[in-house]
Amino acid sequence: ETGVTQTPRHLVMGMTNKKSLKCEQHLGHNAMYWYKQSAKKPLELMFVYSLEERVENNSVPSRFSPECPNSSHLFLHLHTLQPEDSALYLCASSEGRWATEAFFGQGTRLTVV
Amino acid sequence: GQQVMQIPQYQHVQEGEDFTTYCNSSTTLSNIQWYKQRPGGHPVFLIQLVKSGEVKKQKRLTFQFGEAKKNSSLHITATQTTDVGTYFCAGNSGAGSYQLTFGKGTKLSVIP
Image (cartoon, rainbow over all chains, first blue to last red; front, side, top):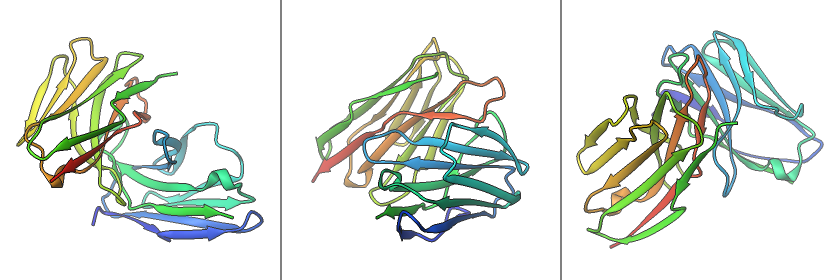
């Protein structure tokens, strides 16, 4: 148990589907992150939220839409994805800026068919 | 943009042998972190190095941060099968950045 919970753990979706990934942290952190982990690529930072405000967006396609309703919850809304979007999507949280220790969730294994 | 290179990509060792992975950044770092990801698992924080030339030890693991704060290494002495996994370094450029730039990782296999 890392204190960061992601659901679902596995997701298979068609290219025309709309789905959402959920992340919840119980650590009292004020920064939350979405990362994408593909085979043979480094972990790629997608979005950062600090105190519910998006502070970084690393040129992620608009078919990925994040939402942070409060400091404990983070969502990633998915629509019209491509097969190359299949990956492990990891949520993480940290105390704040300067990228202090990040606590990762167990990830959602996404397959786009 | 900042790049973090990590070598080797894969390492197979006999149990009891030592293991080292190296990390190099294209820019000077504010700090560097190391994570371990077990097969099928998620990255787990190991340590953070902040000071130039810093050396930290955790049992059989020794972490170093270079004098120029652009490179780092992780050395494991006398590997065990429990050390299996992928080891990632992640650099932070500071200046108020939230961004950690991860290396591609070194996947360690330990042959019993």
